[in-house]
Image 1 (tube, rainbow, N blue to C red):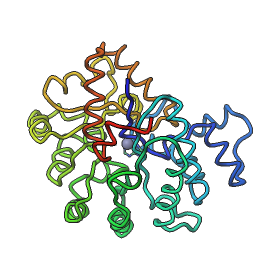
Image 2 (cartoon, helix red, strand yellow):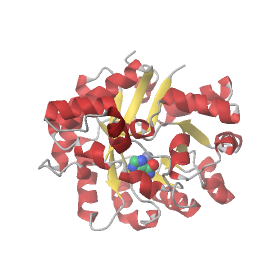
Image 3 (cartoon, helix red, strand yellow):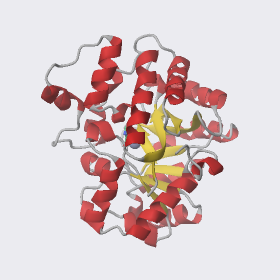
Length: 320
Ligand code: HPA
Ligand code: ZN
């Protein structure tokens, strides 16, 4: 068994335990009661949509506003995943969301790179641009930072587009991804999660080599065929999809349907801290919900190796 998590948000990976450590090193006060901390940090049962879900990031983000906090978060998360048996992970985060206490976006990149050096896990960074209003310059700054720090392994390896997909459609971000293509920066885009197949179509048109979620592709078979023909890999995250209501009927989760259609899929956590899950839980969930077989699990892991934004020899020859 070789586990890789290709879709994991740093802010969404902050567990109550990691939150306490980050609060301690920065002298930040958190609720004394663990129950209250969990309530503030984790997705509630009545979460209705991606927009609701994204509200849960306020607390973890408040702990990631200094170089020390960000570096320590990367280190702690890497060490935790190593202990859980992962052999590789890609941590994604949006540098522009870490500038509330005076860090620049570049500081936020340097801090995360520092944390990467301190963990034993083989891991890389994906810099997220954000959907939203009035942050175009911030997104282009993120893109320039990705260009500056891009490396084949051991650092920044790609960019992404995250945030409220239904409110800010993918097609609005053409210029950003045309520039990324010009710079030869690989990218994945969150699409087909809160918005439908047109969002995936736009991401494919821009040149995304992977799609974050893409779970709604079956609403348009042409999009499924495009994914197959272009060999694009989907980063599926079933628990997250259930929580955001992107796909609620887990017993009909289309993971096998994608495989049968010849689309490459991988299994990932999205936001393990605020969802209260591990990657092993996602595999267990798919075994239980759709009867995922051993062979299918191996195929998912093979797909992850091939789609990882790290040098290919490293993907097959990890630190462990
Ligand atoms: N979609 C969009 N933005 C996000 C997500 C997601 O699933 N998780 C964290 N930021
Ligand atoms: Zn995500």
